[in-house]
Image 1 (cartoon, rainbow, N blue to C red):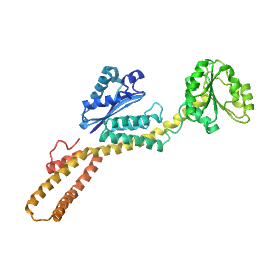
Image 2 (cartoon, rainbow, N blue to C red):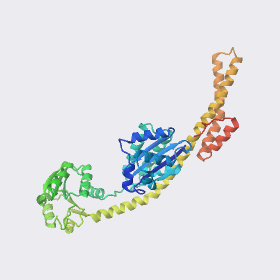
Image 3 (cartoon, helix red, strand yellow):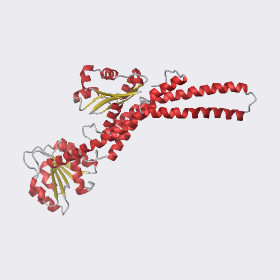
Image 4 (cartoon, helix red, strand yellow):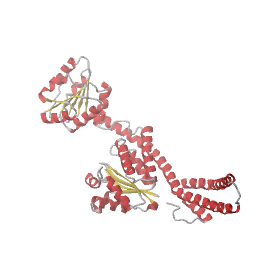
Length: 426
């Protein structure tokens, strides 16, 4: 049994290459079926995300080679081999297992420690499993990979700190408001970052959303996406006092929210705080606003500084994660070695029990008058004796397998007892 991974990711290949090899929900089952039609004794899982495309394959004695997987990619996607092969990587056995554990634990992600990859790996495995593309090896491998990811996210801080501008901004807002139900969010501008931040706030419970933009149609577009209200840009001043959270990201060359406006707004708010996020460059909100009591102002540099610190903290956790992965790879490879010799142990048991049955059949003809109860005791004693004799060799075989010597040990057993059969190892 060997394990192979062949693939490419955001580090090895540009997006224009990755997208040519991507699989989707509509074609992944067909791909699994076609691959297994070519390699009938193999097991496979295809992992395809926007950042990576990988095929994990288990086969007998390494029957499926890297070239087989590469040619499958080429044929399935109707793309010349030389267009993508320079970008591909491939790992076998313990290195392949190590790679999958790293990927699933988000140690190989573009954003270190992000949680999305765990559900993507789970989905890839579930799809392959439902399409009967997995067997004993892939089932154990992927279940273990998902387990390792959970261990890492529980025992380390790899995923604890927020590492995007929008999530850090929401985290700051949570410190002031605890929750966003009943809070009014005012968005000034309609850029991508505004939309992302708004999405985060919406997911956390913000439902009263007002959008102001110089192009009213664009304001309506964003407002509609979050069941909000679009207003004319000129009415911005009137709405400041109603807003608990203000996000501003326009392309204006000057400030669009001024100190006097916010002073006036805070008077009307009767002690309720205001939280302002300025993600525009150049800045939209006059910096002096930060000095007003009960007003909290953060700009892009404040947020980026926290993001950088959090990324550093996640990076420091990588070594701790690496040692967990190495330990888990070792456990899995030991289990794989045990799985490799299980057919040989079964063969050994069958061999001895066949001899036992033959001898019992010979004995039965000589003991014609034995009653059924006594005869059953004879059968039980013979089978129990065989099982006892085999218990220690089987136990030693499993121990030898964990140390990588299982196959040699099984060969000796075979020779000693004259068991010659081509299906005794895999």
